[in-house]
Image (cartoon, rainbow, N blue to C red; front, side):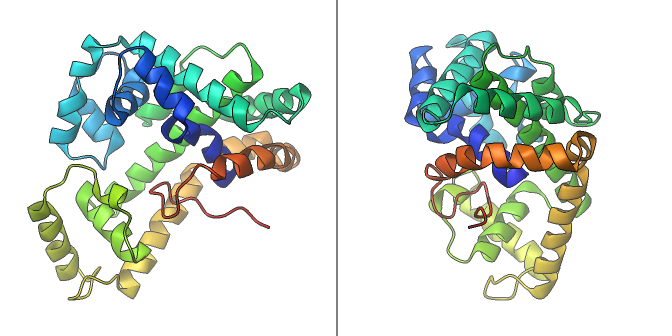
Length: 275
């Protein structure tokens, strides 16, 4: 289900409409909009909680954006901008779908999101507490966002339990992906920090001497993905198999349109949709 709802959420990072909405409230530059929009459910927070919750950004990179962005736009303005941009983006992607299709998808996705267990999941809980949108696309995007952050919180917990720190996690991803995209590296870590992470992972048997992922690393990372899936399962268990299958059908054309925005090798790590 993640592969079907994540593209609906991801328009907020990838679509020109989303960036324009942030710029309209004074958040110029990609990372100002990113940090303000994603952190806004937490309120006018300092950098430290965002470093912890977002997990894979170097603290100095976060500190360049927060709390300074709140002088440009309040959290409430950032929330309105991110929803406005996301809805406008989804409207472009779904204009051929009837309103009844979008409304049914929003209804079912909201039911799943309302069943998300948010204890210990800071970003999932903060998004779940936001007011419900008025129109189907707003409701659909907010529910997808709650589920996405709920899943992400569980993924971070699995990474921590596996003993990986943020730069080690990115280093393993680079090794597993083969040819790393530049934006996976652009999380603010220094070359010295990357080198130190590679050395630690080599010593622990995750990387070979030439930086390739070992069988141990592949097995451990698959265990992390499996733990993430288990931690994200409750909303779909609560929705039930029939309604989950129906929601998958409804989300499929939205997800396929959203996939057209996702660059090859994106750090989202989304699998291709069947067919």
